[in-house]
Each structure stands twice: as structure tokens, then as C-alpha cells.
Amino acid sequence: MTNGRRLQGRRSGALARLAAAGILVVFGAVHCGGARKETVTVKGSDTMVILGQRWAERYMATHPKTVIQVTGGGSGTGIAALINGTTDICQASRPMKAEEKQQIQQKYGAPPQETPVALDGITIYLNQANTVQALSLAQLKDIYTGKATRWSQVGGGNAPIVLYGRENSSGTYEYFKEHVLEKADFSASVQTLPGTAAVVSAVSKDMNGIGYGGAAYLKGVKECAVKPDDSSAGMLPSAENVRSGAYPISRSLYFYTSTAPQGAVKDFIDYALSPEGQKIVTDVGYFPLR
Image (cartoon, rainbow, N blue to C red; front, side):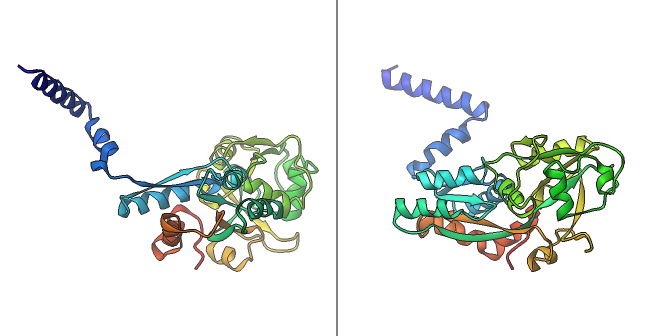
């Protein structure tokens, strides 16, 4: 047998072993007939990461020449990546700050492009055993600044309030601090957790716990109604209440790009805004723009 035939035989045997191990598909996907794929990076909000991943999955199913890579880390992390030029799209659950926009302007010679892609109502999570049905914005401020430390102070049982929240790189943290705490400092007793799923998990296991986060994460916990003031009726973050702004902590969810989007980046953003993309918003648990 010649050296060429021996090499071919060894290669065939190696491929057979890979196929038996289920690895041949990966080998083929890497080579992909020699075609190069365009990659779009999406980074930022943990609130939005499940939404971004779902958009990416559906988009890539019909756009095989494009790879959409979605990661979280928080809105602040995504904005920093956009400023540094290490992501194509930033997902943010809060608007960019003036100083962040200025950094984009200085580096790229134009302001960032802001695109609202979905709506959300920040949801107050309680343990399912908690008897409290509604809390006003003033009560939430008292709870999270440490003024109210027992559930009996806000209409519940005689038990300590255990606080769970997000880390300060989170857009939800920033929004909650501005719109609920009125820029006051969070209590030092807040247990900050990396991601909304972790907050929900903690509250689901702690009968005295309270947390906050995106509407899409409401699983295994009780949804607490929110009152704009002490004399108003409590409201839940329904599509109607969020879209009208009646729910007092409604917000938009954003895509940001450092320059006007083009090519695959623009096409992916257009997909998120399309009827199919907006249906995915509903499927995930947020609220479509229209």
C-alpha cells in the first residue's frame, strides 16, 4: 500500500470513529463547504438575554450565512462594550446616560442609534406564601432603602423583610433606583444577585423575600400589584397597563448601535421589529411595541 493510500485509510477510519461518536456534524459545520459566515455580536442586559437569544435562534434558522452571538452581563457592561467597539449591538433595559452618549459621540463622530424593541413592566416578586397583595411606590422605596424592615409595616405578617436585588451594572438596578427609590441609596442589607433568574430563585425559596425584575421571569413566585400612590388601586404589568403607561414602573427595552446599523446588523434589528419578531416578544413574556 502506498503512503497516500495509508493516509486515506487512516483518515477514513478517523471519520468513521467521529461519526460513531456523533462528532461528524460538528466537523462539517466548522468547514461548512468553505463558506465564511458573518458574525453579529449582541451583548448587555440580562433582562433581555433570553429575548435576544430567541430572536437569534429564529433569525439564524432562515439566515444560515449569519451567526448571532448573544451574551448578557448587564446593560452597563453592554454599553461599555459598545463604547469600546467590542460588540455590534448593545441590549439595554434602561436608556443610555448623557455621558455614555457623549463617549460614543466623541469616539465615532456621531450619537448612538437608539431603537426601542420591546416593552416591560418591572415586576415585584414575592414568595407565594406572602399575604401581601399590593405595594405602593412609597412602600417599595421604604422597603428597599431600609426604612421598612418588617412585613407588618406594609400590611403583611410579623416577619422580617429579606431584600433581593440586582448588581449595579444592571439596567434594572439603575431604573429601579431612579424611578422607585428616587435616586436614594439601596439598603446595605440588599442581597445583590447576578441575574434576574437568581433573584426569582431566591424569592421562591424564602417566604420573607422580595425581589424585582423583568416580567418574563415570573415563574414560581407571586406577582405583587404596584400602586402609584397609597390611595390608588394596585396594578399588574399587563400588556394594556404597560403599553398605556398606567403601570407605574413600565419601561422600554432597547437596542443600541454606535453608528447607523448596516448589513446583517440592520437586518437583524429589522427582524426584531417585524411582526414575527414582535410575536417572539410576547412568547418570551414581554410586551410588543404594537
